[in-house]
Length: 155
Image (cartoon, rainbow, N blue to C red; front, side):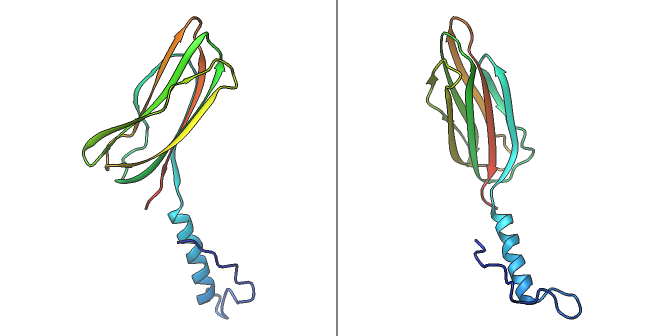
């Protein structure tokens, strides 16, 4: 529910006894509803100085509820290599079925090389959401930073 009502500046917010009026309570409830239905970030991950593939790693989310989640990653090359590529994979379970989503491998060896993407998933309750990377390089190792955000998008 989106509260698009303006602040009721011409109405009293409290009555003579100091209690909220119905107009004020309704407006504040709309604000509360907006906050409750907004996506919330859960345990963002920040990994810097990475120079190798990262094996399957559970994102420390605690015990999650079944529902829709938005998974976002961003990476940037921080030290170029010779010929390198990097891709990011997320894993989760939906309806008892193991699912994965892997980004397209990015090849680039300048510190301005970046990539990001967002995936919407439905995850079962109590099971981990994971990430991993696949890194390949010839010559000197490339270093990169990886940032991951998980957001719960349904209540």
